[in-house]
Length: 283
Image (tube, rainbow, N blue to C red; front, side):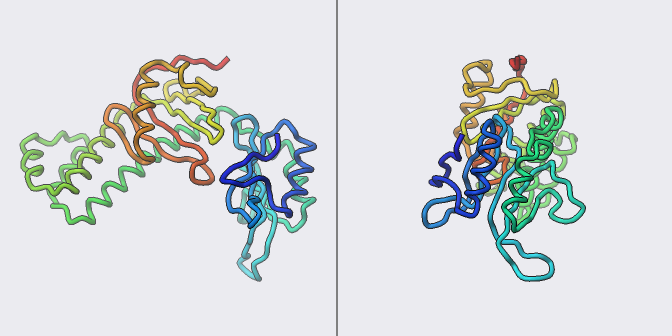
């Protein structure tokens, strides 16, 4: 499949064109997606490589500034399977198109990650993102001059101490609208964190080509791959519909949260759904 149109890019810049054409001829089963910055003709400086829906690497023509010496334009071939002793450890840097082509044709480098590793990374990413969202809310509150008792109440919630309701009521009376929203956001995230910690969640990952993959924390496996949500249980369809109405980085009580996960903004959106059961539909 030829490099598809992304962000208005019709193909790749001349420096990458030779690389793309030769790799495409040798490995036509892979999918190539042009992205990132564009030149005046609308051609991209980067193209991603996919095996099915799995991102397996990228090739770029861009500036590189070494620790010593002057900046220069180079080919960058990036893959998690490239393991160098020196920085950047997972990227080949070269001025030769032939070297970039050789790396992209190496089936031991440009290949999907093992399924177990992919599932582990996705589930860990969801847990880390939830923690990051909670930290952002706490930071927001601390810089808005919130009263110490408010933060104490929230940290008690976080630590499972179940503060008394009368303390909550007295604090609420003195909250500004901004404080009240931040507090509400935190309590929603704190509730989600407990459910996620119990291993009761699913990740629904949407790629730029609208394909989706469902991961289960209960079975530590991929349980669905396809292009339609209609094969998912009704409860999951309903929660997905609600999360699609909010921005990335937002959570809904009793539903879950959504975030971006990828090499560039919009690469893929992940919806984390709490509770419920999704049967294994992978053949």
